[in-house]
Length: 336
Image 1: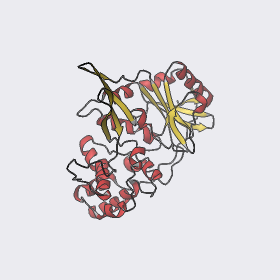
Image 2: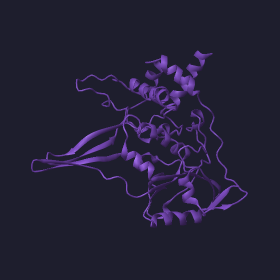
Image 3: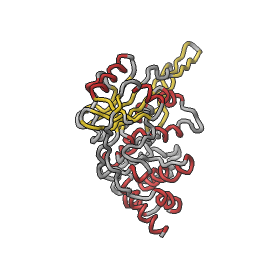
């Protein structure tokens, strides 16, 4: 039987989590849009299933800037200390399903040839409560990558809006059950989700086309609109490029991991001056081939959740979806 919780009860739970010293993050009012951020009081949460927040929950697991270790000299001795792991539990509430679905994808990256203890520690100490979408816009394409407005992937529990003051609670993991144990009531009503957006391309056709069309004119055409700002990669819940730099002086400093972007011209610039991806067309091809061909070959899933964020933030209304639609059309023509 469906389980429900009132919004007032939910906010009481959030207040309880905060009182227990847990970190709680969720969509709150920014200057113009909703923005995922750490909250200090329950009233800051805005659980509006029809509005897509302007950032993703990725940064609560893979921060924009993260200190890996510090160093200092004590006489002739060099002292290196690892950064401290996350101490408090964190609860992410109100994540869109396409955002939460990025976590199982990122898990494979950060536990592949190297175990990233910083990412893994955050994952272990985090509980994700997603919010099923009640509307889809023209940029959404979750159905094209095998997901839906209420997909459970990456979520420990999900809220599905019944009405303005009530949510259905769907629990998927032990973590989710622990949060909502004895906090819900049984009811005959269920929440309503958005209809899946139309399938805009066949991901298998896209992958097949990318394998045999390196340097296709599609990328020359579409990249003319691209200014290489990297906004699409920063807003993407699955993009994970980073750089590591040392900050400080000779006596002391820190080693820091910072977000980077494959769309930046310096990303693949060699010390010799050679750049194997010397123009935006090559960089765009690499990004899409990584998401829909290279990553799937390695890990068995596409590196995209169909959230549409990349197109929403693009000053040229580009992102990956319009390019994927063109590739998909050509791929279908070749298969037929």
